[in-house]
Image (cartoon, rainbow, N blue to C red; front, side, top):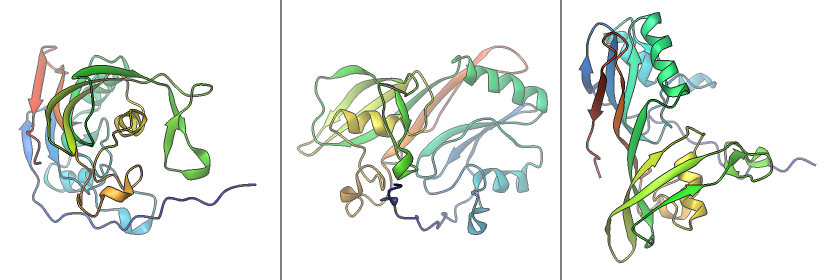
Length: 222
């Protein structure tokens, strides 16, 4: 018997903020995505406003390469030609693209650094939740490095080596230190943290035209 979803349908209220283009040339566009904005249009009628449509209104040739979760802010890259889109897609698929994230976690995570190596899969009864699934999950690996601690939380830099859905959020939850402000995995923290405390800080990959490695950064807003 199918269980009803425990995840409430979130109210989509995207922020009315100007585009923050970090870098652009003839092949790529690099943008600092705000929290609360979908990367691409959602399936429902009221979720057409998203980063790529806003970007295409200003740069008609913008093409999607990868995505950030709606509630995650930070560095995201778009292509401006089909050739560049294919090249950048391979950078992600072949794991040549490297990303780091800043997150604020509930509680004190110890030790100062470590690696989470836990396979992840969909929690079909409670979508869009993901879960650690040792039997059917796909490999997922995340490194963490503590930046700072307070009495109640830990600030970390996260480096994913795979790109599973909700990977950082589920891996931190599995350590017992969910990301603050997470409506799905730590709903009890959203009253004090109105946004998900997860930000894509850096992105490094090869440029589709020059082949040179390039890196882009957007400091965390929290």
